[in-house]
Image 1 (cartoon, rainbow, N blue to C red):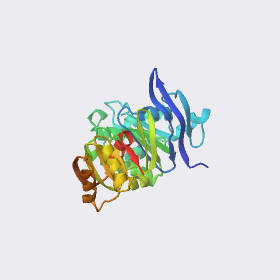
Image 2: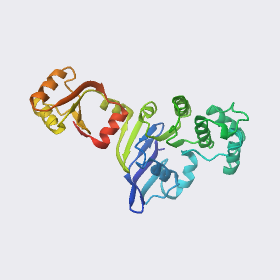
Image 3: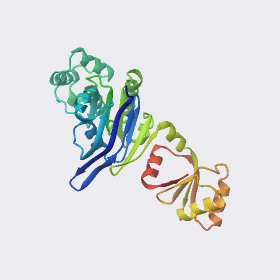
Image 4: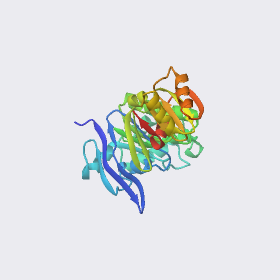
Length: 306
């Protein structure tokens, strides 16, 4: 039995002349929380819609639970999907809304509604109607709907977008509980990178429809290690000096004249002297560690050397 929950090969989507997704390759393994990272409009939603069958790919292949082709429809029954805020009836309660969808979708067991309400901390909402829910409650009800069929694989598109800090923490804890207690595999897309860093066990970085990299959280942590960050007037000249004078290529160049040096951490004065004596104007220098947002910015605009 395969441990690969999702694999895509050459996944492509065109809308007229616009190439929304360009040959995307994703692999999600059982038990992972996969963070799909990208700016708004990068292609995250289109990828999720192609995986779930809401959008037909222009080219490429989707494999779920080790199977592709015509059997995908049956296997998609093992997934739960939340793309944008689902449509609920404003004058119905949480329980009434879910019961409507349970009957509509033919999901057996009336106790299912009570179970997912309990799992998403909505069991005590009583007679409160959907129109009076906070955004956090609405998002949790959307998650409850996605959980109705007890999915093995949960796909969530920007579920924390617009939530206040308390709502984000509540939603994050729900996902961690699902992953750890029910072993639910999760793919979550977001542009709120600091929050993904509290969730994801691996990442896929996408920009302008192109998958730039897939990396485990452990490997990313290694890459986002301590560094000396310098702002200079001529980053190319500064890079050359680092290589020729200090003998290191363990640095990266970011947009805006910024370099991150991962060696000589205890010798910032030596780095400053080499740059200044080499004719490079040093605007600022500080010791820091990179985070997920920094790394993503380097992916879409920087050049890394190693």
